Length: 80
Image (cartoon, rainbow, N blue to C red; front, side, top):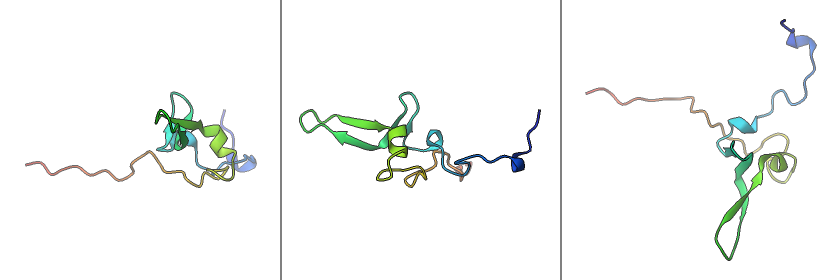
């Protein structure tokens, strides 16, 4: 069954998707753009992507720090 999208109203249809962002860690749902370093151990604890997207001071609903993980321009070296 095909649905005519022009008749639908879908929120956030044009907002970036975390799973396609270069900072997204899919196995844990984390975003390695934002985190906090432990000043004793030096370990960095990254924030969950959902927390960053719901915080307007971080990435926010519009994904202001989104960077595509998909390289759209590919170049190959010339063959010898």
